Image (tube, rainbow, N blue to C red):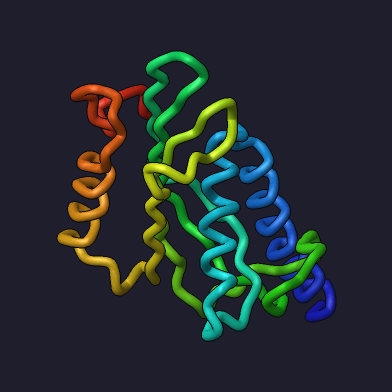
Length: 162
C-alpha cells in the first residue's frame, strides 16, 4: 500500500515538472527568450546551487509599433528543482516544494525576433517572500521609463494577458 502511495506521489511531482515544461514550450518565442535570459543571469550567480525551471506567467505585455520591433514586459515565476545547477536535460527534474518561488520581471526590446542590446534589457528576479510592493512598483516604473524611443506609449498600457 505504501509503495503504491509513493509511486502515485512521485508520478504527481514528475507530472507537475512536465506541465511546467509544457507551459514554457507554449510561451510565444518573444517571451521564451526573456525567460532564457533570466535563467542565464540566475545561473551566473555562484550562490545558486539548483537547476530552475519556468513555472508560470503572471503578466505578459507587449507593444508592437511596427517595423518588426516589439517591446516586451513579462512577470513570471521560476521554481527550483532537485537537479543540480547546470543540468542539461531537465525532463527528469522534479520540483522542490521546500524552496520559495523566484519572482522575475523582465522588459526588453526585440528587433526581428532578437533581443536588442539597447536599451539594455532589465531583469529583476528575487525570492518571492523578499519581494515587496514597493519593489513591484519600482519594476514597473523602471520598465515604463526605459529609453525606448517609441513615443509616449507605456509598455504596460498595451496588449496584456494574464
